[in-house]
Length: 125
Image (tube, rainbow, N blue to C red; front, side, top):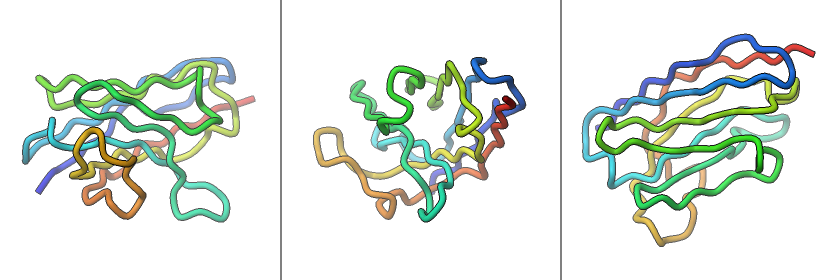
């Protein structure tokens, strides 16, 4: 079992920044791909970003250049730095863990076995 707890959400004006954190406990954190997701119209959850412990990261096109995900394996924590926020970024953000080794294909939504409770991000215009 892996337990995930997100924090760092809040209300921010357009153009502002927030940093989300996701603290993991349980199994070896470094063995997991860590992803960030948010709800989207017509989708169960939209992929936002993911990282592997070796440093590889991937992003959805809409956040490239604005969001950065990183992880501190010693602290079992993954972060999502969100800059230049837009009203359309408003959502509940979830972190998730997938037991997919680095170098394999990017995990699909359904390969993420563990999910946090989510943290609300609201961007005002």
